[in-house]
Length: 104
Image (cartoon, rainbow, N blue to C red; front, side, top):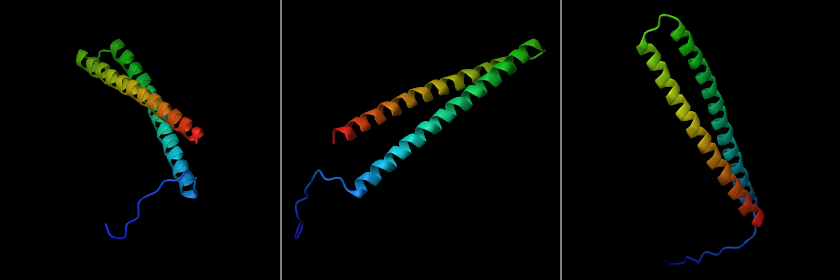
């Protein structure tokens, strides 16, 4: 530890701090909109699969085909619910970060 100085901390905001905060905010916003588009794409898939199930039930579809599609719909709905939960957690974290930034 020869020649090392003790690190100090000051409350000044530098350009680097602003750039880092902006990059963080942009990445959070990008992640939020990516999750949101995934959720809407999943909703469209669910709608299409439910329509297919209805068509298959009216036609001479086998029970295995209907069961497969129903299990696929259940999986997609579970993923959609998980995506919505993740979006809520991201919103909560963004709110916390914004509150901390406002305090400074």
